[in-house]
Each structure stands twice: as C-alpha cells, then as structure tokens.
Image 1 (cartoon, rainbow, N blue to C red):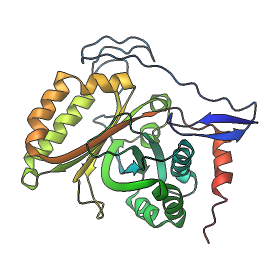
Image 2: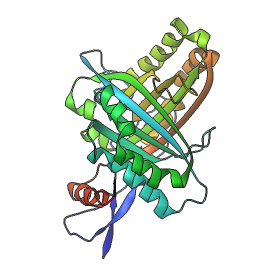
Image 3: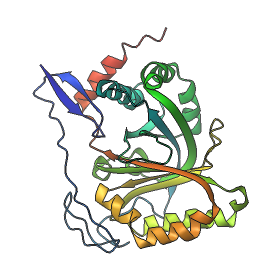
Image 4: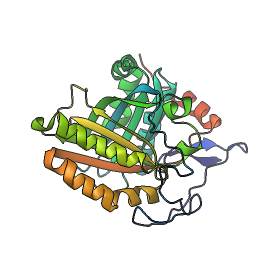
Length: 302
C-alpha cells in the first residue's frame, strides 16, 4: 500500500511504501487581509502588528554577515503536463541537494498566480561558494535530471544567479528552523535601464531592503544582487523574499508603502520585470530523504 508524503511545497509529493513511522505534514489555511497596519494575532490565523521591534527578529540585520550565492530558475511547463509528470519533475529538482555538494538550501513550487511571462514554476537554490554554483551547472547528475526529467515537460527555462549577504548564523544561512518551515517564496527578476546604474539603482534597492527590514513580522529573509549568469541577458538583478505566510505576502505587496516605493523608485528606471511566488511547506522527513536517495541512485549516469 502507498501513502502520500509531502515536501517543502504543497505541489511536490510522491508515493512511498506505507510506513507507520512516516506521517504526512498537514497543510494549513491562511485567511486574507490587506494593509500594513492590520492586526494579525496568532500563528496560522493571525500575526502581530508590524514593528521593527516586534516579537519576530528579522534575519535581515545590520550585524555580521556572510556571503551566499543565490540561484533562481523559472520554468514554463507545457500545458499538457500531467500531474504525475509535474510531480516527477519537482521531485528530481528538489532532491538534487542530496546528490551533490554545495547546495545549502532549496525551495521550489508551482506559481500561485499568473505572471506576464507565463512562467509556471520557480526553483530557488542557495550555495555557500561561487565555485559550488559553477560546478552545479556542469555536474552530470544535474545535467541528466535537467535533460530527462525537466526539459521534456517544459518549453522555457531561465537562470539568474547573484551574490548576496545574510546574517552570519547557521539557521539563516541554511534556511533552517521554524521560521523557514512555512511561508511564501517571492522571486523577482528585474532588468534595470543602463542609465540607472549607480545612485538611482542603489537607491531603489536600498529602499526595498529598508522596507523589508522594517517589517520582520511579515518577512523572514531578503536577498538581492547583480545577475552574473552569462547565459541570461534578459535581467540584470534578482530578488528573493521569504514571507511568513500568504497573508504576509498579500499585506506587504498590497500596502501603500510598497506600492508608493515601487512607483517612485523602481518604475522610472526599469525596462522589464517578472515575478512569481509559491508556497513553502515543512522540509522532508528523514525517511523520505532516504527513499528519494535510493530512487535517484537508480539514474544511469554512464
């Protein structure tokens, strides 16, 4: 008999031989609200009032920081992709972190809404060193996963890589702990006008970062940086924001503070943007990881 086991995102699941020691994670419902000054209350139902000195400690701090290297992939899945094919594609992408060195965090999922470029899925990975990211692209295991389990189901793929900084502590670096178990991953790719490089661009990105720092009750982590992937000329910068919930995402992006900042700082200097967000659920149980490692080991790399 088979049971369904859940991963870090609600669209990613697979089937395992039944085992009483494995309990699927339960999903949770998040109600909707608007306005940065809303009162939100307890976890999964509400959240505290926004305040930089609130009960949540932001991982975006001004203390000692550590360099990290962020990798973003946006996929355009074919319209006729089946549920089984989609799950298979996400399974293999997610578990690449257990088959090669250098990947310290992964999240991925189906986009929660449509975007102007029709990307359907987002993949986010973090590397500790730039050399690890460079090796990732030429790793035969990843190449086989891409060729056999991703591209047959997709008609478009784009990669953006950038260097950023996070708090120099194990939990924010590896994106572990309770704060990272649930939430929404927001991915934003931007192409700035060439004449904006310098003070206008820096002012825009700094304004966005300050707004995220001012709202630790909504946001767990923020990174941004200049795209150094030579294969992607469409976008100059990448941004990743981990929100605490879909409610937190909606409050932040629907607020007048965010809208005014975007209108005054970003719109005058951008050529092109694409964004998507996807939900994040608890990480895989150890039994599930063991099963997937055995499954992935069957891939013939010869």
